[in-house]
Amino acid sequence: MFRPCVSLMTIVLVTALTLLLGCCTAWPFSIIEPVEFTVYQSGDHISVALDLENLPGVTKVNYYWYGEFDDMLREFVEEKLALVATAKSNPAFGGKILIPEEAIGTYRLLAVAEQGGRQSQHESLAIFDEILIQIEPNAELLEIDFQTDKPLRLGRASGTRVYDQVDFLGKTFELPVIGRFSDGITRSLRAQSTGTTYHSTDDNIISVNSNGMLRLVGNGETMVTVKNRNQDATLDILVEVNDEPNHPPVSDPGKTQTVFAGARVILNGLTSYDPDGGSLQYHWEQVRGSKVPLLDPYSAQAKFLAPFVVEERLFRFTLRVTDIQGADSLPASVDVIITP
Image (cartoon, rainbow, N blue to C red; front, side, top):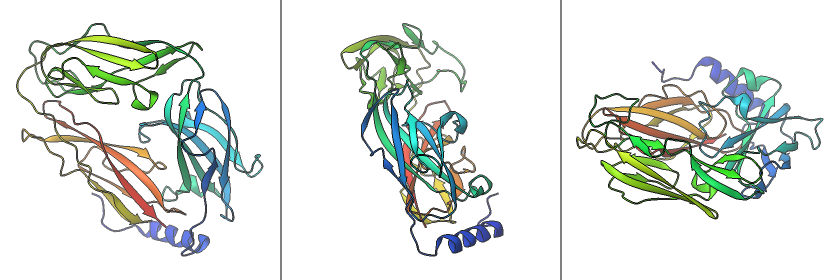
């Protein structure tokens, strides 16, 4: 059970950090290069630089690339690491960073500082900044394809309630859309930020949102058309599932919270609901901020201890819920703003 009080160790840590960094001082730690929302090309080496004037004790800064919707709780940190910079780097704690060749669309560049080794020892310390940049390949899109069977047949004429099967109306899943480019690289085009648009010829059978998430609405045949740049592709879809009426659940992760470092944070999804009155399964993900140790990510109320920050920082979480028949909500997000 999660205890309502902050542990003595945490109190001591936060107190020590407060004395070290100054009671009410907001120390700068921000990415000044590249500039947020600038457009860069896949495979480019770009300069990174920080403003961390007078911030004491920083020994190194780790830079990470994350996709727009990557779940930090699930991703392997080592695979996202792009650069380790120290005071001896040029510039100090900066340098050159490689944009992944396969990148396209909106990406997050995250810089996380370590202070005298404490970053690895105390998860409640978070000195970081992140920006969003747009990445475009310097290559022509030759073809759009789907990494799935064609035509795509979903479900069965009848079946039992199996969570890992598409057996009921309301099921939601991601459409795997890829693009083959003239530089020989295959890139994912599912996200709207890559320039992709979607259209279903019959929303009463399959509906699709702007980020390529399909929802089973009814039985029958339909066609989904995908467009990006000067290319388009179509996918025929046949839906044959149990036609028992089932409305998809609705995810509600609560309202934006503003808390102080060291406070207990509860992500409250209790107001999510199933229109049919059934029970729900929950799944929380983290998509912004430095990684936090989230307790109970598969419960209605996930929890974490607000880390110590040197400046006001935003942490974003998404919630999806699933009903007893396997129908899913679309993801909904909530922000937690942590202040020193």
